[in-house]
Every structure is written in structure tokens, then in C-alpha cells.
Length: 341
Image (tube, rainbow, N blue to C red; front, side, top):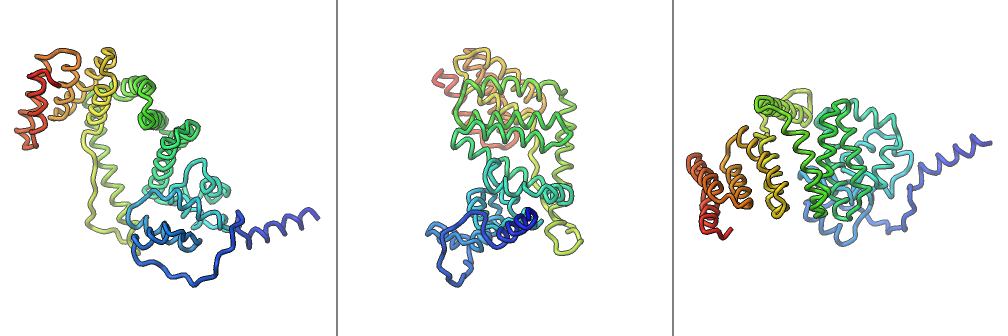
């Protein structure tokens, strides 16, 4: 008797939506042609199951990954038995659902399919899924100042690195930084940033950092090749493919952190001196005009005016030497010279 009840429930859930919806008029569906047409019809209130799926796919084709709102509405008309479909679960995950939302929870119901997706899908696809979930969830947490959601994103980020525990902790800490910066909690941001950059950036030698940058280049190249392979209709890999990789990632990160401290900790010399250490390391790794500019601003804020002028002059000269627009550096130099910064 008990078995019969369960079977009846499964049968019902295969013909009924997960969450009851208001009946809609049975109009013949006409697929929009352009993304703009999709946007206009969605804004006008169209949200049928077929429309939402095609709208998400259209946005993904355009490189838009923020589809968390759309996937939440899409799953409301989904049947439980459809969650046994590999393609259906993959579609939900690719949409980047909010980590504590209905869509994500439904996608995680079938553990076998989830495990299969993370074992069989190419690395580029798995990374894209994780990044979409992380970014959409974090942006939502910031917008709503939802600390619990932000914590879930931290945990998800850490776990996404598997046994690479150091990168897991590092990127989880970075999520925390992005959250507190996003909600403009300066005190917490400065405190966590100080620990983050000391722990994960200053304990590496310059040679080690340069080696990591080289490895990042190789990874980006391999990832581009894999994506190119995925996009082909057959197993042939395109001979030509392009990719973009950020250079001097560690140095840029240290510079950006130092600049944040310049803007956020103007009256706290302890933080400003900490930022000086970071920017000096950034310059040691890769001297750039922007880095000398940051260095000069920090020195100026600490009332080391002569040293500030010297570093700003280096920023100006190096920009000219490397044929970078130097107008901003010149303006800042004049402000420092006149003490009007």
C-alpha cells in the first residue's frame, strides 16, 4: 500500500509543475528573433516556460551570465521527473542560479546527475558554471546585504577548488573582501584585506610570482583551446583560437589593494604604511607607471612630499617612455607640487 502511494505521487509530479501556477491563455508561441525583442516581451510580462528557456539561451549566446532571476522563474513550471534529466540539470546550473535559491536547490536534488556533470563536463564548462553561481550569488548578497548568503558563497568557492586547499582558502577570503567592499563596510574590508594580502601575496618571492604568471598564461591558452574544441560540431579542434590573459596578476592585485587603502584609510597611518609595503613589492615584480602613481599618492598622504614628487615623476617619465598617456600623471604631479592634492 505504501509503495502504491509513492508511485502515485511520482506519477502526479511528472504531469504537474513543482509549484502551482496560474493558468495561462493557450496562445500559439512565436519565438522572438533578437535579444532586444526577448527583453521587451519579458518586460511586458511574458514568462512562459518555453519563452524563459529560449531567453536564457539567447542571453548565454550573447555572453550574458546573469540569468539567476530568469532561472528562478523557469523552474517554477518544472516537473519533478524533469530533474532526472542530465540536460535539464545542466541547463539550470549553467544559468548561474543563486546559491540559496529554489533553482539551485532543485538542481542539487539528484546527486548522481550532479556528480556526473562535474566528472564528465569539460573543465572550461565546470569553471563557467561555478563562476556564474559565485558571481550571481555574491552580487545578490551585496545588493541585499545578506551576510548569510555571502557566507554560503565563501563556502561554495572554497569547495570548488577541491584538494587545492590554499587556492580554496585564498579565493574564499577574496569573496569576503568583495562582499565587505560591496556593502561599503570599510572597517571590515581594511581589517580582512590586511590579513589577506599579507598571507597570500607577501610570502612569495619575486621569481615565484613570475613563474605563476607564466603558468597562468599556459592555463589560459589551454582553456581557450578546450573552449574552441567544445564549440566545434565534431571532434576537430580549430587550429586558430584567441585568448586574453591578465599579465602581472599578483602585482596588479597588490597595486589595487594599496590604492583601496589610499582611498579608504586616509587617516590611519598603520594601514597606509602597510599599503606602502604592498606597492613596493608590486613595483619590484613589474614596475609600471600606475604603480609608481599609487606609491606617490601614499607617500603624499603620509606627508612625505619630496618622496611623493620623486615617485610621481617616475610615473610620468615611465609613461612617456612606454608611450602610455601621461596626462593624468602630469596633473597629479602638479597637484602634489602645489600641495593641492
